[in-house]
Amino acid sequence: MAPMPTALTWPDRLIAAIDQGLRAVAAAPPMATRPSPAAALAEPVLSSDERRTSAALMRVNHAGEIAAQALYSGQALFARSPATHDLLSNAAREERDHLAWCAARIDELGGRTSLLTPLWYAGSFGIGVLAGLRADAESLGFVRETERQVETHLRDHLQRLPALDEKSAAILSRMAEDEMHHGTTAALAGGAELPAPIRGCMKVGGEILRRIALIV
Ligand SMILES: [Fe+2]
Ligand SMILES: [Fe+2]
Image (cartoon, rainbow, N blue to C red; front, side, top):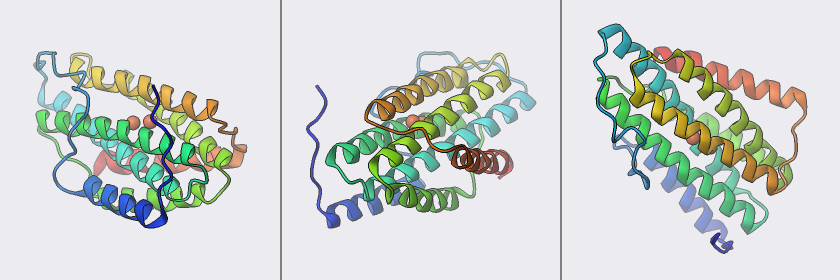
């Protein structure tokens, strides 16, 4: 059964947003509430090039999850209805699982997370606040479009992962399913289709993150 919407006060929301931000950019990755889809799979034997490629792709996905959490946290701050606030908070919680799974996989691959993590969080939080200041239908429309673009991106990364890296692939496949679910939930909750120019700007923003996080 879905949890009852909660009516949080402004100080509650602000404290929750600050807490989430500090946790997201802190050195220790969050605890996942669900086991990683990669947990039961054996570590594949990868060449050093394949390992580097996987680690770089997973770094991009980790940065994307940081951005998703920040977006939803910023949006939740200004959500008009308690139901919208709860939807955004629940989506952010699942994104934290994604973040933990990506962080653990990066560790296994001997890679590192993006050096620009605080920047991804701060920039995305600001964009989330702007989206959250709009009516709930538009804010939920932003979630719907974000999730659609992230799902497309994840399917692209699944093609680009080294074929033997089934562990990373299992994580990205589950994430893609979750993102599809988040997008559908937002659409069913009244998320409007955003105008094409906004969708285009979001694509450009996502592409900037993808290209930079691939390197740093
Ligand atoms: Fe996610
Ligand atoms: Fe999502």
